[in-house]
Image (cartoon, rainbow, N blue to C red):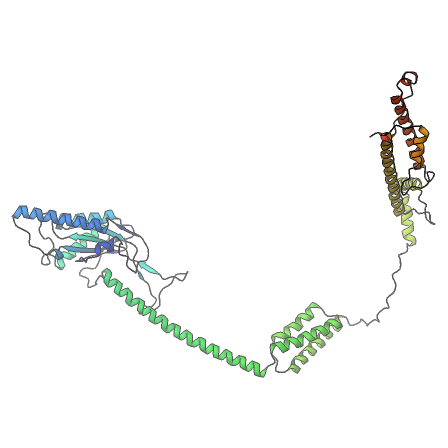
Length: 475
């Protein structure tokens, strides 16, 4: 594995157990990835049980109370690990130290949520950022072990006279072997910071960063102020020595309206005119001169494209004339009517025109519009006759509610009933046929009424069954 091993022992502090299980979260955390063997409350209970058991054992064995300072019995160890190590690896290390030295471990934890920020300079004022603009950190993988330096027999097992540099170097080698890591440098002078010292170091770094940011902000502010001042000066200079944008735009708009009245200008010409709005002019006369030059340039281009074209006087407006068929068109039309299908179609159209009484014009041509108008007129006439028949039938039904006295009287009443738009019955053959059908129907109705009033006549008189008119089938 790439990381070098290291384990350091220091006297425990009051809140070490809370730090290990993250009950007390430091401000420099970079995540939430940590594992702890037990909570701070459970760790203290284990410590008390171990201490009480060791004291009882020592008292039974020696028949006297042990002589020790409890503050010197609690020690904390911090060791380097990798991202692949687990709690089981720390437990193996704690069991080894208990078996060999008598150290009793009552809590151990793995922290992967701390890290050191990376910087681009030695003064640590320019932080290293990733592609998303976030601070880059180097994760500090390490483990914590809390020991009671009192063995199970009640004897103190960690005395400074017994654990000098040589012995502590041996402990470093054993930690590297158990954790499967490369051993660090022998008798190194490097000092490992505890979490309180690390917090102070982080605070110092943050203060240095804030000072660097403030200096940078001040530099940028001075530059921005200078840019603003220069811009204001330029604006003032433009306002005093050049024509305003508003006046330039008004002058170009005036020229555009003149061009519209003249006509003959293309979209490209107007585009070149609008382009003059992007320049600065010291006087209006300068702008007017540019517009005139542009007009002359456009005129020269048009003359160059059409050199031989002479201006033609405008033709006087003439009244539109109806198009006349040429001799060729008449010949083509004649050939079309020689086709059998077209000839048959024309014949059918002629028969329809005769039926509808449509007369051809002086050239012997029947216009289709006249046929359509005649068909519409016939349809309107049939509709009027249908209305007349319906109303006549309703009148007959109303009269039949009372017995008819005589056929003559009934016929007289029918013929004297007038439709508002009705004329004489000789106006059209359709009306004659309709009245004849009505008379036959009245005759049949009269006979049926007479038979119902005189039943004795039914045996002697067997009238022939009349034929029903089509107009009265539904009644």
